[in-house]
Length: 308
Image 1 (cartoon, rainbow, N blue to C red):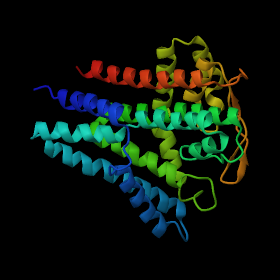
Image 2 (image 1 turned 90 degrees about the vertical axis):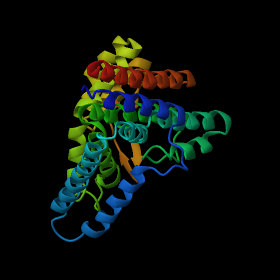
Image 3 (image 1 turned 30 degrees about the vertical axis):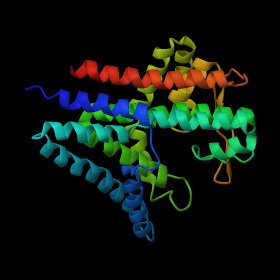
Image 4 (image 1 turned 90 degrees about the horizontal axis):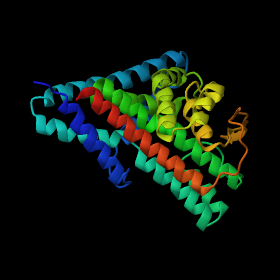
């Protein structure tokens, strides 16, 4: 019997739930458990000698362990199709973040328009790693769009990509790797050795999804400028992956991203992505929101077509 429905039904249900509900803050989220586990290991092993080895073993254990536990759970649940579908649907819902990405980005734009620049700076600080205290209006709008592009890849297309490759176990193994990257992959004195492997692993896992995200973005927007920007600017980002969706959106909107920003008290000089120095407007945000949603729908549709 063809078991493709065990992949397709949870995908469609979980994606619909994310679109309807987003990420309710009152709901316990498995990523919080991931964060607790990572912090527990970091506190105990990010000390003394051989920090690179300790960090690599920690990352491998957490990513591999996540996959192994969920693999055995879902192999067992295959004998109970209804329970399998419900459990996998909830897992897909937890594994995606597009509704929340667009909504949290909109909160920044709304704060900027309704409450002023200080409120927007504070709201932006919840979703970006840079120092927001001195950003002007143009820099705030730019940061929002950069975040929407980069996190479309990390928070939506990449999880869907790994779900298509290996179901819920692969999806959450990726989410664990992504959480490791966000927590311990900083180039600071504390994390530069311990988080080295986590950073390289995240780069490797996102090689295909980041480029696939850029492709989907230019397809749903029918933007030749986006295509040109991907090839011209995608490789200029400090990250081997983040530049591709950012370049696509810069080309689609004919604007410019990148440039110097302050992260954790240090000025980081990033290359510019794009060459159109225009003022970013709220209408640009709404078109970026369309691009995010349409790209996610296209990805889901592509997976369904492959497996039906």
